[in-house]
Length: 334
Image (cartoon, rainbow, N blue to C red; front, side, top):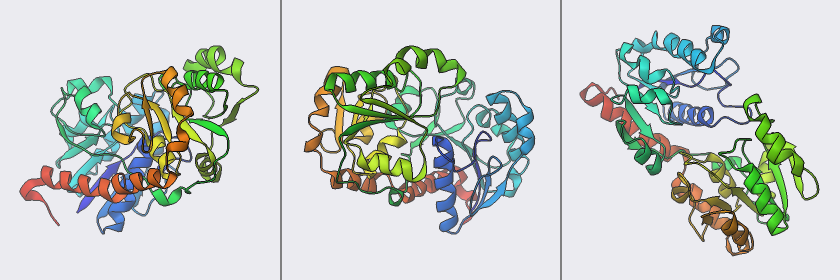
């Protein structure tokens, strides 16, 4: 099958550090190539892939996030006649421009952009059942859970005495609540996150920065071996979400490392974490503090096995291939 993958123009695919949709797009692309499909990846300069790579450096002349995606997707769709199907990961532009493609286009809902309500009949894949519920006004063709490469993560059975927050500084992610949990539980907390963007600086200065001393340690953005070791050594990862996050790749990465997840019952969390077996799904900070005392009940090997059995890259790609064939119908070319 001839397949186009339109990743984002913002950072390379795969990302050097933070970048969920770019990481998923990379996993899909490389597995499709491995299975023998002809794949072209449209992505930012500096991307790495076994597929054919096409980048458009001129997108950087656009001044906003949405404008860069618009230029990137419009350029990519000029090539759409070369493919059997287009798989889009740019939600601010792909669904709006899909009508110019002579072949079917489908988009993965990495997040819900406000423009999508104007294009409800586009072909969407949700990344969790909860997201499908929240996007009931859109034509969701199927739910496809994201997958990860478990082999990139080390099973850590010998834990150090700290809990970990890994993400970014946004009130939705709850780093300020992770600090509350650590202080109340009297546990060391390591915060691994990139520096806040300008629109979150006030949040960081008011609720995060004053606590960065004593048992609260900020290590900045982590990647590679540093990230792998943090995940493997943490006694637990805490995710005090304050919004319905559609999917949490970091939760899978933690469990693949044998590290229990303690997360609030929001978004996809109860679909990813087996309460009492791979972590604890809690209601609030009070229950999160209580759960900290129970992490010894969780078996590290069970955490990893859960990810291997339910969130592999191959399982994700096989489901996307079934969706491609559904959209192509009788036009499908093996």
